Length: 65
Image (cartoon, helix red, strand yellow):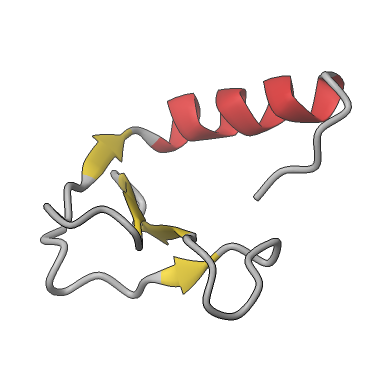
């Protein structure tokens, strides 16, 4: 999946006008970017690794994005 083709979703914890995390996912790839990054860097990971991160955050008492 190319970042230009991605269906980006903004974190539900992001208020209007704030720097926000955006996520796009397919069966094979999860893309992440941050709206305040002037370079528009995109991180890529696997759905398995993304789910492990969310699980870890949830167990630590932090809500998932």
